[in-house]
Image 1 (cartoon, rainbow, N blue to C red):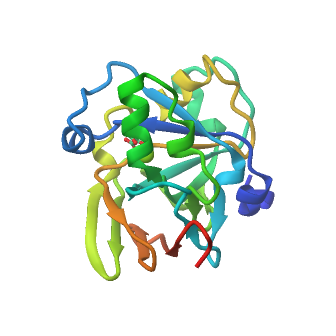
Image 2 (cartoon, rainbow, N blue to C red; image 1 turned 120 degrees about the vertical axis):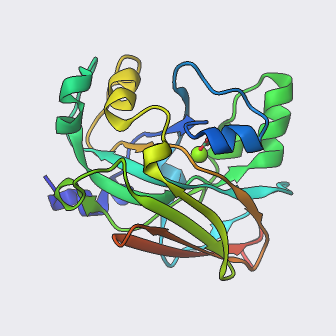
Length: 219
Ligand SMILES: CC(=O)CC(=O)C(=O)O
Ligand SMILES: [Mg+2]
């Protein structure tokens, strides 16, 4: 199934984000643990790959990095049974769910959507595509994130509250999943970045990423 999936970020379709899927992150933001997956979307225009910088969105004063395992969909499906869900996976990717936390906090207070906080251009940096066969257990992978060489996040996908087959099954009850869609499975923790910072991330011994942060004007 790998073929074109190498270029999934160029061919990309929907990005479905899962929020508060780790207890530590929900706790650090003072948020309740969801009873069912908390979903949001990012447009495909938010994708960037290494070599392109992350741009702080205009007016944002608190940009957070969230290192996450992305699941790349390989086969179309609606109402996918949990038991068949992994057959719809093409592979995985190490991703950053960049979040304009100040925008999100305002949205939370006003009860308005998170689109601006999550969906801005460059808000979804991704690494190389990892074929499904390279990962025997996606629920036991170390994740880490450093900013300017200092460790800011360390977690393990075993701590996901809702596991990948359940997420695929749940999401596909509402949104048909299609090849090149990507599911961001949630972050273990988060921290902020500023203009000029360099974010590095890792997924076990499978992938590493590095992205520079620039201001809204691009420098
Ligand atoms: C509060 C959030 O930004 C939710 C989110 O994206 C997560 O990973 O959790
Ligand atoms: Mg996230």
